[in-house]
Length: 255
Image (tube, rainbow, N blue to C red; front, top):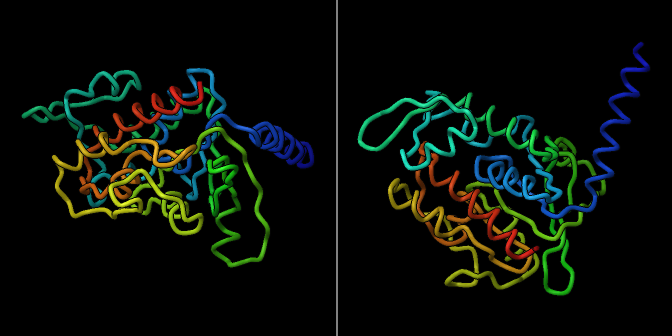
């Protein structure tokens, strides 16, 4: 029995892994904007994989505000909450609250059941470039990198790469510093996240969601970091709308 269980896990995982080596879209970071975008792209018929460095997908949703696991949304995105069957309660003044654990769980379920493959505990350590275009991601197990083991990575090729890594904007920073590319920002470089201003940060998250270089897109706080936007804290309407916009932009390009 033990051998059969082990064989089942290995065969199933490696079938999934091999079938994901060539993707339409590689999304890095399983936060809210990345998972929203992934579901939209998968429903449009694209082969999508998310690479998440932590064990649990969900990004910054789980903990709510300072481990009070409730989060806030604007009423104008209730339609998206209903799409994911998320329970919400009016907080007045145009806002609703929702249970952070329910939201994270709903986003994961929605993505996976749309056909998205999620590879957790996997760290993207580099990008693939072909003829002035980002064409894939270079990955390794996160524990391998944390232990500083000298183990070579593997490569997943894709038509588009979405940086949903949140505050660090890891892929955009890689492209700017290591590949020395000029980003589509006012300075041509990563401008850096500004201090908290919730209202401004929410709107700029959506505005800043864009293609920053051929094949490379940014959503959520990664987009704000790249474009010099403000931080917004435990309010997530902008993240959801950013994911929707990122998917739309990618579809326009790769279709």
